[in-house]
Image (cartoon, rainbow, N blue to C red; front, side, top):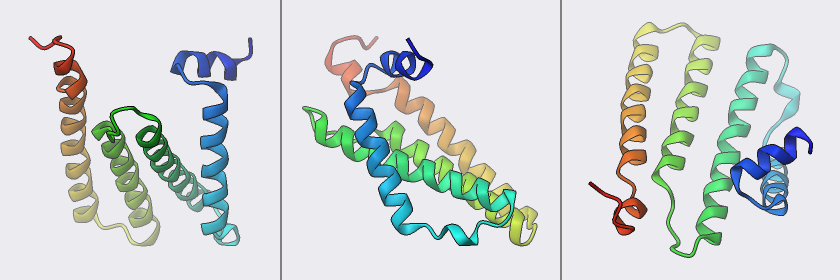
Length: 133
């Protein structure tokens, strides 16, 4: 079994779903991104972070559509926001190094990590199944 198949099996997703998500993500990203502006490693990192953001959004949409309860997981929204702020830090460092903005964004990221831990601990499905303490 290849590493990709083991990863898919570990995630518990059918292989077709993963391929469809990746295809839609690549399609959206290629349609909106101008690849001619990538001229150095920093811009490449920013483009990859943008790709991850689009991938997370497509993942949220697919999970909303495929889920029986039609819920968007708060964890996925927080993850996308954290990646977006990391991309903003890369943009700030590229253009003009502004310590105040960077520390402010790092504070926001720290708060989002606290929310992410709380979202993992206090999930609605956990309480609906009677697992809550």
